[in-house]
Each structure stands twice: as structure tokens, then as C-alpha cells.
Image (cartoon, rainbow, N blue to C red):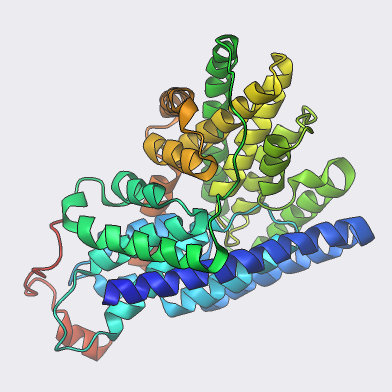
Length: 443
């Protein structure tokens, strides 16, 4: 029952959050068409407001949310469970939703998928905390992993993607401990979203019939470029984070955020508004209309945009921005190689897969997500080939994924800054003498 309740609530929250996010992006478009110059005021104000909310009320609500969930899973044992509340909690849910909506409304280049994963994991964790003492003991790791998978499934309407994500990114070798609860959580969260929104795909049904062998020669360099682009995006963000650690004054952090916000506003106002938001509109337009053409600089904007936005520390996901960057690269490549309309769709799907893989280093998750979002199983060979190649290319730049490196940073930070346990917690969790939780899998 706790898993069912958590999955149902996660599905409802994911649907509401998705609708609010869509309205915020529509608001961005409306402001651009009516009073575009307003972004030079709106974007800095909203970025600083979001940063203040996160810093003041929930510091670990910043960024994507996936590294925080991974860290929470690692800390979910009796000795360190008191630290998990900083990473997944009810406060995280509220701050994450409000602050990310503020950012995307002002043109911030973020997605909602990473936040949905952290929100859903927080819901499951809260339900686990509320269980009465007489209720059968449930693994804390089990609840958080299931919540994360259910969140991804509800966000993208991709149940297989949610399961594979949990196996490949979250649980690694411990899938056998989570499989029953994981399937239950994913199915119920997905059905809840389906019940509220009806049958839908995150993107739609692109036409990819009649692909010639010539298209394969475009896919090979596309896989290499998206591997470099995604890995470069992640490493750039991490490099900026490392440099920002030397900034001690809060006023200097605020100044940096204002400068980044003005850069985003300038790129959107003076060059192309496609830099704003998650980039889902780029994927929809290039896949499902005859407007396949994108200017050569759009992929550059879609790579630079997330770097600028994420480096400020505001909350938001990197799934959708990396997918849109890959879609833009695929569309430009298709035009360079003079591909047909259907082959252009294939190049866009492969670009999305390659860019997401090089960020997450999860080729199976990326492939399954793109396949489920578009129902294009007839080109699975091309998509998995690109995932493999882009993953190999990304590994030459860094052996560890963007999420793994952030998770290590969060674990170090929470160890340094964790508020001491309360007297009650100390009684409940005594170092070195606490027996292992039989419901928890071995670390």
C-alpha cells in the first residue's frame, strides 16, 4: 500500500507540474512576442529570486535533482539516514516546483524531468517516514529508488525508461532488491498520468519509414559530435562549479547570477528565442512539421544555454535541454547531408539519443526513453548504435558521468554542512552500535 499511495500521488503531482511548466513556457513566448526587452529585467530578477529561495529554504533543491537522489540512495542506511532529509523531503518538493517554474518563466534553459524525479523520490520518502511503528518494515532505499523511477515514468510516460533508468543509473548492481516494488511504482504512477492526460507520447509519432543506407553515413559523425557536445556541456558546468567554489562573498554569487541571466536574455532577444526554455518546441517542430531547417547556430545556443543556466545553481533538469540540443544538431546534420524528410527525423532522434547518453552515460536508458517517447522501434538499430558510439566518445573526455561527479560533490557537501542530529535521532541511531536494517540491501 505505501508504494501504491506514493505512485498515485507522484503521478498526480507529475501531471500538475508538467501543466504548470508548459504554462510557464507559454508565458515566456508571450512576453517575447509582446515586450521582448522585458527579459533584461525579468530574467535577472527571476534567477536571483529562485537562487534566494533555494539558498534560504532548501539548498539541495538546486540543479537537476538526480544526483541528489543518487546520494540519498547511498545514504539510506540506519547510520546516515538522518542526512537524507536534506536531499529528499517535503520542503524540497515545494521549493523545487516553485523555483524551477520561476526560472523557466523567465527564459531559463531547464527541463522538468530531473526535478520530477527528485520530487517523486521525496514523496515516497515522506510516506515511508509517516508509516506507523507497527507497520511492516520497508527498505528506505527501496522507497527512494521506486519513487525516482516512478517520477521519470510519469514525467515522460515511459514505463520501461523508468525501470531501465533505475537499473542503469540508480541501483547499479542491486536491482534484485527492488524489482517488485519498482514495477509496482512505475506501473501505478504511469497509469495515474495516463488516466489524467489520456494516451499520449511525450513527443509524438514521427515518420521514419523508407530510410536509405546513405543515412547511416550521416549517423556516424552525428554520434561523434553529439558525444562531444553532451560530454563537453557536462564538463563545462562542472568546471564552472569548481571555479565558483573560490567565490566566498554572497554578493559575488548574486552578481554572477545576474550576469548569466543577462546573457540568456541577450542570446534570446538579439540572436534567437529558441535558446529559451526546455527546447521541447524545437523537437516538436523539426519532427512533426515541414519546418526542418534550423540555423547553424541553434545547436550552439542549445549547448551554451544549459551551461549558463545550470552554472548559476538554480533548480532545473538537464534531460530536456540535452535532448533539444541533440535534436538541433541532428536537424543541422540532416541538412548538411541533404537527407530526406523521413531521414531527417531519424537524424533528429539519433541526435537526441547521442546527446542524452553523453551527459548521463546511460546508453540503455537514453535509447529506451527516445524509443518510448516516439514509438519508433523500427529504427532501434540506429538509435542504439548512436548511444554506443556517443558513450564511447564521452568516456574519452571523462570516465565518470555528469550525475556521478555531482553526486560526489553533494555527498562531500552534506557531510561538511549537515546539522547535528537531534537528541531523538541520536537515541534512535547510535554510531557503530546500530544493527543493520534487514530490509536494506547491502551497500
